[in-house]
Length: 243
Image: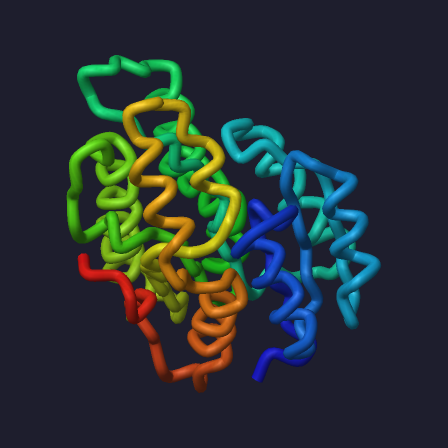
């Protein structure tokens, strides 16, 4: 179902984004991979079995998101799937007042999704087809101490996904999927600077977490569903995760 499709994946240099780009390529899609670390994108392109177009994009840069989408359209003529994966998780207790981290999370986790979706939606509307896949989190459903701002951004992504579905699916044939991972073994925990959360990080390291490839598999499943099927939500937790 994915052979010949063009998929744009954000945050593709590592973790879920990298695993998703590789899985989509293995499924036959052409992959447009973007992130800030171009050396890792070059490594991804060398490993992928299919065509990969890659470029440096900071998803907080509205113009940069638009420019990369136009480059993909110029090169391949279509964007069939957008995977909004780029995200940050510098958890902290609100009382720590890590406002710079709050701003960065809001900019990447929410505005980045808005900017990248805005960059592709006119094209998808024009051809009355497409698929927006947003990587939210179990934190988009369940709030926890130290996650107030992170959870707020992921609740927003989950709400945005449903809003996009209502606006675009029945009217324009654009499918929308919200992927909600639980604890995944990625670089996200390394962005936590609040010293009082050392115990949380250590507990997460000891848990048998999900692998990035587990979430990539869920994304490929949703993307590969028959055209009349809209997989709206996929919540994936490790067996060991209680909440």
